[in-house]
Length: 362
Ligand SMILES: [Ca+2]
Ligand SMILES: [Ca+2]
View 1 (cartoon, rainbow, N blue to C red):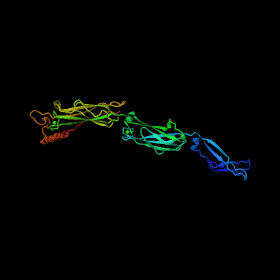
View 2: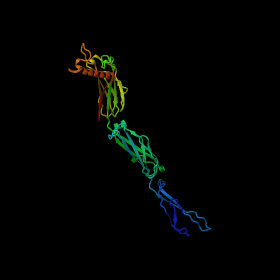
View 3: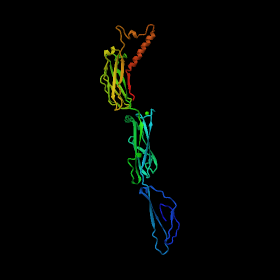
C-alpha cells in the first residue's frame, strides 16, 4: 500500500484469497498544509500493490482517493504602532523641533503566508521591516527614521500619524483593503501655538567730535534685529520708527526661530534732541499670526542716546550741579572725571543697545 501523505501504511493481511479483503492503517497523522487550505481540501491517493499467482495477468494497481475539506483560507495582516517622544524640555508634550521615534509590529493573523510586507506612513517616510515574509502567526518589527515635530503639528495641537501595512498573501489571495487591523494611528499631544517675537535695537553714532555724546548734526544709524521666538510663523511683518523714518526689512515673513535685521534711514540729531538731553527713538513691530492663534501684540523697542550735559555761559565742562558736594576732596573730583571718561570710552564703541520684548503665552 502506498499513500504519500499517510506515511507508513500497515495492512492486517498481506495475502488475500479471492474476494477477501483486509484493512490497512497509517501510523502517522497528516498535518493540513497551506497548499491544502488554498486548494480548499486535503486530497490523498492510495495505491494498492500485490503479486498475482503465476500464470495470471499482472495486476493493475487499484487506487482510491479522498478529499477532506479544509476551512476557507484567511489572508490577514495586523499592524501595531507606537510613538515615543524625545521630550527635550521635559514638559510632556511634543514641541517644535523635538523628535518622535515610531515603532511598528506586523503580525500575520491569517492562515496563509504573506510576502512583500510593507508599512506605509506618510509622515515618517521609509519604514524598514526586519522580515518581509511572514508565515501564519509570525511577526516582525519595523522602524523608521526620527520624525521632527513641525509647525503644522503645533497648529493641529496634536501630532496624528497613521500607518498601514500591505502584503501579498499566498495562493493569489488578497487582503481586505478596509481591514481596520491593518491600520494603526498614534496621537501625540503637542505644545500650544505660541506667537512671540523679540526686537533688539542698536544705534551706531558718528561721534564726530569724539566727546562720547550725540551732538547736533551727528548721525545715527539704527538697526533692528527681530527674532521669532514662538512656534508659529509670523507674516505681514511691519516695523515703524517715527523718528528715523521708513524701516526696511529683508522679508515680511518670519518662521519660528528665524532672525532678520531691518534698517532705518540715517538720522541726524537736531537741536531739539540736544535740548531735551537725549535722542529718544521708539520702534514698533507688528505681525500677523496663523488662523486660530491669538494675535501678537505690537513689540516695542525704545532706545535713548545721551546728549551732552548743559553748560553755563562762561564755564567749561559739566555744570556745578554735577560737581561733588561741599567737603569732598580733590580725589573725589578726579574719580568723577574718571567715571565720565569710562562712560565716554564705552560710547566710543558706538554701540548702544536697547531691547523690547513682548511674549504672549497661550
Ligand atoms: Ca516637549
Ligand atoms: Ca559727539
